[in-house]
Image 1: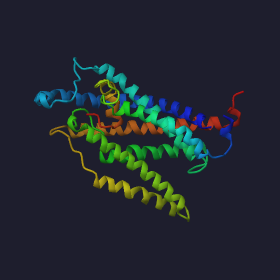
Image 2: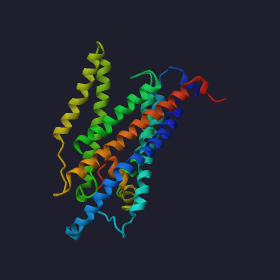
Image 3: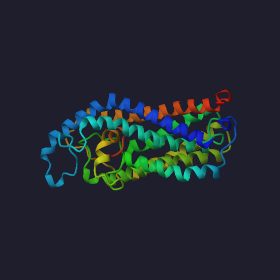
Image 4: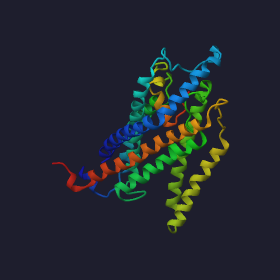
Length: 244
Length: 63
């Protein structure tokens, strides 16, 4: 059973990643290109010694056409990794926590995955287009981002455990779960150091639209993962679907 | 797939035997796609550049 779910998770993740890549290509790439154009315009102002970034121009290691193909490679492989881990968590939850139907649990788990691993870090450390962010601080910012993802996952686990311990109706259990989730998450939002590396004069509208496109990409991914994985798991669970 | 039809739970020790080898491999894959700048891959900035657009649009700090 675990193998069956894992294979379906890897496959659903790959497909969901490619669908999200399509969304990112349509709605994200135009903003990304605009930001790169701004970055190229500003790059002459920087001192060569402090320049640790990369080139998007002719002499780049990977040219823009290949980077656009790399978008689908990145979202596809991200989907495989996330889908596989999702399937194993799902296997542990199945018939223990949440809806008893495969489709219902898949959607609930994918929605929770989006909130815990995307929305929680996004509120504190939102996505940035090229030209925003100092390459010198990438290690620290990546660590803070990972901490925020871990806080989201840990808060989700605490919320589920709390809900299972609370006696009473659905209202009491949901309230306890939401509180158990929000307390550590809001504490992390408030206490972790802020990152503000938007260069002066960077268009606010472009930043907002890029961030919306990025959030949309992840929303498309997690929705597609929940729907596709739910369909595959339901089909596998149906007795008539058992191959000879 | 017939095991999926039974409304049983997966015993946690059995799940553990899958988690232990699979999750580190998938986390490494996720790291290489989203975060590696040469430290693990030993490919310099190549992965960063190849995955560049995906990193930005998936919302991970890129550069």
